[in-house]
Image 1 (cartoon, helix red, strand yellow):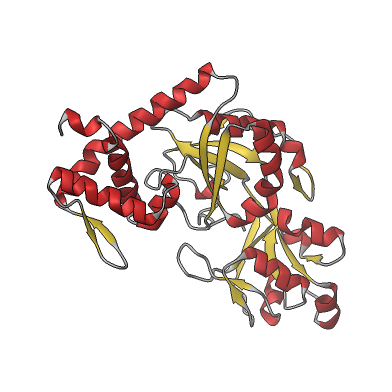
Image 2 (image 1 turned 180 degrees about the vertical axis):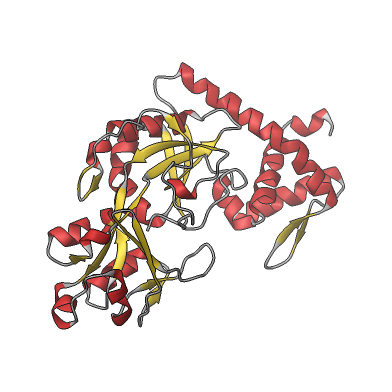
Amino acid sequence: MGVDMMQGNHFSKLSAFVAVAEHRHFSRAAAQLGISPSALTQAIRALEEHLGVRLLNRTTRSVSLTTAGEQLLHHMQPVMGAINDALDAMNSFRDSPRGTLRLSIVRAAAISIIAPLVSAFLREYPDIALEIITDDSEADIIHERIDAGIRVGECIEKDMVAVRIFNEYRMVTVASPEYVAKHPVISTPEDLRAHNCIQRRWTKDGAIHPWEFESSGQRSQVAVGGSFVVNDPNVILQAAIDGVGIANLAEMMVAAAISEGKLVPLLRNWERRMSGLFLYYSSRRQVPAPVQAFIAFMRRHKNAVRSGQTAQPGPADDQMISSQPRSAPTRPDLSLV
């Protein structure tokens, strides 16, 4: 590639190409770059005309790389990474970190834990633009150019660096007072087989998994059944409040409804403990200043995060930890709830 490609607006075209190549999608790449899809299409076309080769194969539904495109992406990714690191290093010379922070967060955590703190974070760091992608699958944060993810510890790959931002929590079985009053008493997890349970279809694999319980070191799995299946935990919560059936959700999701009398906790001696919530990022790059700022913010505001009661800092809160907690279950959980 000649030096002339770095002149004028050619570098912006190269950046546009990398975004499309990594997303394999024009609209998502355009959203990341903050330009219109038509402007992005024109930039790619101009780059291909300048180079004299076709870089992308496009159809109405998909985008793939040609051999030339694969080669250009291979050379450009390290360049873009080095530029991003160089720009981020300049944050140390400013009074306040700046730049874009892209976080991939499981939906329940985004709504119950992170969303209430967004306003305070943006006030504290006015030069940071925050983008949250709610995603219940296991997002590839490197491939999708996401700065960091927030997941349950059991879900994080071992090659990631993870920082605890939320302590252990429990999975709570709940139902509305009306449902409890009209149906047989539930004493053990096996009793759930005779009840209408609100089931979740998981985004990751499209499956409906058994509910898991534990008590005094004893574990139990129950393949529940019911008349309502949904892939969104927030819809499950509302359905439980409306008396549709029994739900099994993270305690931070149901705490308010329980305190307001909208839900009744069941099987209190069979509440499964989860390892906690972790912010994780790739260990293969310099930690961006906005990520560092978010970690510091979450530590300072930990007591504002509630899980039935105010969360208290744990011994591992102020250090980098392994992404696989020692108490991780043999079957990894798919998401927060």
